[in-house]
Amino acid sequence: LLSRLVQSYPYPLLEHVAHLKELLDYFTFMHSGTALSIFIALLPLTKLSHDLK
Image (tube, rainbow, N blue to C red; front, top):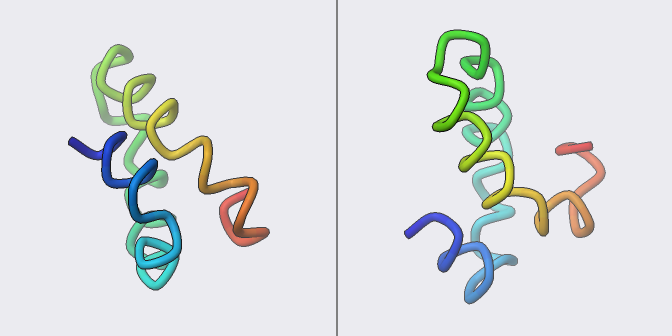
């Protein structure tokens, strides 16, 4: 679902960069498969936002 949202509506999601960055802070506590899936889903947003790099 997250991947589809990023692909279909990347610019509206950029309004929530602060929340997405907070999500990235919790990567160390996540199961590695879950963290990887979220990372892959959010990867296209890094091309649009310098805050996520």
